[in-house]
Image (cartoon, rainbow over all chains, first blue to last red; front, side, top):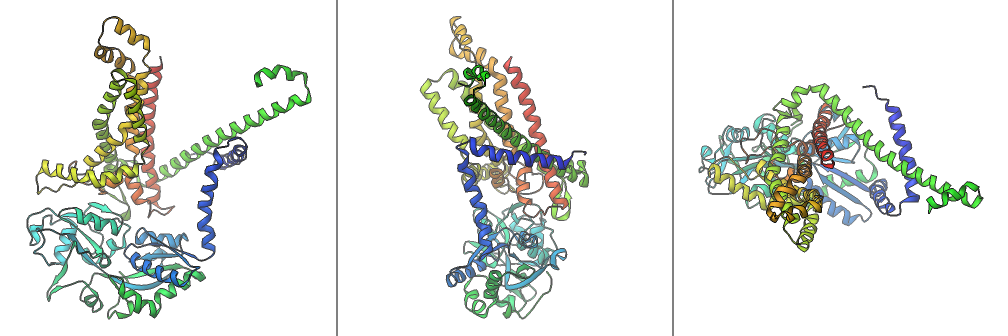
Length: 307
Length: 310
């Protein structure tokens, strides 16, 4: 390709500058759009300079961060915490690129960015296989690790093959960027070996989908446990282990991960203050236990340094 | 005004110079605006081509067009399922949506009263302006349970079928493109000269005969343009399709099995694509494929439209 890029870009720039000053004089209806557009762009930038903390990433961690945000903003009138969920890998990518102050993740940072990021472990979360409730699986209280692996690799495709009644199993996966998918895949399948199937890119949407799709199964953080969903215990040599704080802290239920909040370099004042609050004894002991599905890191009698 | 004044300014009176200056400023502004729009488009196309071609060079055109495994997280970029999904949903939308839209247009131009035609046109104009996310959401809530029942009705209660997939997407797209196809067909058929219709009636032809022996043969190219335009719109639709296609990156087992399309997959994958990575480049390659398809359709449409003008 031999296009002269410098010229093309310069020509575009000149044309743009000319068009902008020209259009100001000549087109009365146009000014309505630009001011609002530029205001929309300017606001987050201006806010970021003051006290806004932007957070993106894991949707499994989102309920806890939202709980912290509520308490924190009530106590600090000037603070503004903005939380968006788009998957753990997006959280890591965003914070590494400097697009947000904090990247939430269910997984440890990959080797290529781990060096630039500081890890703040704020909680532990358990994960479980959850399914659409129906007569086809009401007699299955627990599944073995091997059963789960076969279901999610697509080798078992009917509930009758794992002790239920005849009904096709509809596997719904989280998107490849999901930390829940990474954690569940690592621990249950030994890697991302999921059968290619229907995909939801958000935990909340997945809960709704599971309720409405007959025979469907997926995997979710315990914060999304719902009375209308079937939650499977893990069947092992010593009987069934129910997912929960007790079995996770002692290490008898293995499908869990740390909830990480990554910062890049030294956090700014507002970010540091919010992280200090989330790791404070007050939050960890008073607020965190009231949010469904989260376990304080300090209660863990087992630990990990990789996923 | 300006035209009438022009000869008089030859005299060179100072106060007459001003309109000419203003005129050239306005002219310059208009040229500048036009240049800006064209330059932006060219810059965008050039960027898309450059990044897309880089992606093709990195992975290979054969792999992108015919490979069957799309797993960017494992560096596998086989786009066949995505391309097939795009074509299947767009063709399905035309098969379901185009005929009712075109026949409605024939009814409105040939048989309906002026009041009915006007009302119908207004309703269709509103329908074509509804944002696609609204269509997608409605389809997710109300259409997918129906397609789920239809799938189980066809393949049996125990079959591995679901409400999402090509069937749901094609029906949704058919509903979405029908107003546009109808409005464009309406325009094409209303360009049939009144003299032709009157001549036909004078020869004793019934409205029915006039419609199908005079108007449709005269305007069919314009109608075809409308259908192609509908196809291009269906192939590019993203938001609504993403909500009901299922998002499984594989060829579907049947019409009621989750799969994906080029645009839906770009939306899904772009969140993790960091600039400079192969994944990012290949996503632009897929965008380029979509653009090339659209350009081909537009060229066909233009050729047809030009012949229509004769």
